[in-house]
Amino acid sequence: MSSDVSIWLQNQFYNRIAGSLLPLSWFAPPAPRPDQLSIPEGTLQLQIVSHCWQYSHLAMFQLSSLINYPPQRCHLTYTLFYAVEDTAMLALIKRFAAIDIRTITWDFRILPKNELFRRAIGRHRVSLDSAAHWIWFADCDLIFHKGCLDSVAEAVSGQQTGLVFPDHEGITDLLLPEHPMLNQNLNERGTIDIDTTLFHRNTISKAKGAFQIVHADVARAVGYCGSIPLYQQPSERWRKTYEDTVFRRVIGYEGVPVNVSGLYRIRHAEKGRYAKDSSLSRIRGGIRQATDKTHRE
Image (tube, rainbow, N blue to C red; front, side, top):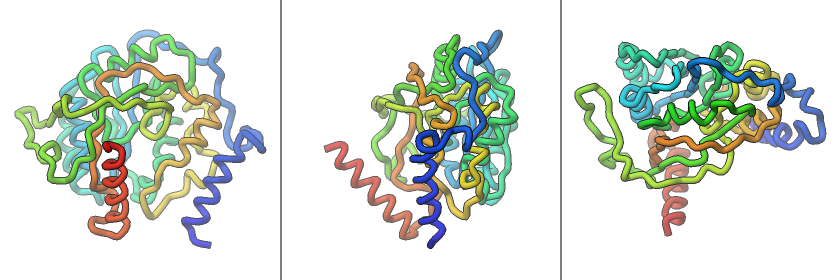
């Protein structure tokens, strides 16, 4: 049996069995229930957790948005996992780490590639060591534009639930590598920005992937699938986060939609995570473009 087939079968097992045929206590420690969750006092402490592999051209937008539109109503710890082999990302981090923003603490963490490729590993480590009130498990292609992080602070204020998610985002059409938005020059601040008129509203119907904002009491108690060996096992290639579904099941929260403004995402045809011009890259690119064309029609 191939490794990929084995991993697929294990994913199916955890997605279908945990909490249904077998008790959740077999898979994770119990998560605190709503009436056990603390309500933060004083300045809200928010932590964003991203992973980046060969996505520096998109991470540039995320990092720029933090510099251009820093939070005013919360303090942000920005955690980014990366690998030293990604030299473009390394150069980007060196540039931004030198910029001092009063309401942001930079937390750039190196991981071996095979640990970076399994995002639950980094997410689990942050879950256990975070000092924040809320943790946003994000992706590096999200853009936190004007007022975004402050709207998160407002949305979670007084919330006694373990998980919330943005109810909408702004997205572009599927952009080819030569699109002007992906080929901008840096401005005088050394950052780039977006033209928000090029984005259209996209409704987010559930907490998933990059749209999980977790109460840190829950994260510290349960971790991120830390008790499930499959999801803490390093990988030789980038893995989709199928464990997100299992994570939500073991914490016992499906997520409450909240209004978060200024959240954007550039949709792009070419995935930097996969080898350029490889068969997998071409197949994925073709599927994305065909799906996007069908959706527009």
